[in-house]
Length: 151
Image (cartoon, rainbow, N blue to C red; front, side, top):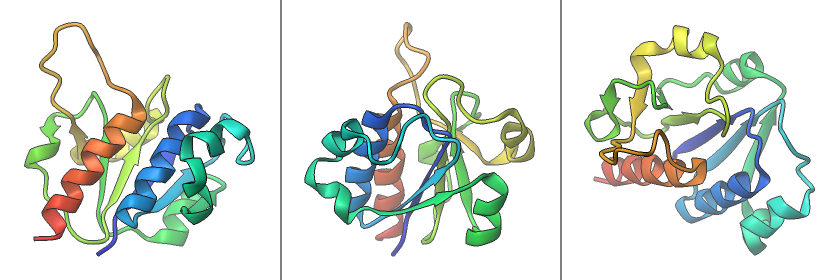
């Protein structure tokens, strides 16, 4: 069983570190799409990932196109507040790539246009929040994928 978590242009090292730790716990692969808003050897990244960072299976891709060419993903879902379909109603298969945009602007516009039918959202019944922390969102979606795939 394999889950892939893809971060497109992540900006905050703490979130990437926490998601790396999540990947170790799930035996998931982490993909980082440049540009990154931090250096991979920043202390904040490693502090958030604690002593797990050395165990993260991570690949850094120079851009979205090189990611697609290298990985050739068969199934991708894009978590976004713009998604119309609920994460809990989505089909998820082994080998899925779960894609997340960055903390301040989300995914690039061309991704929203190209993959509009693959956008999913996390339910937000609260009245005053427009989104949740990236690391929390990745955890929710990744564990839902894990729950579905392991059946």
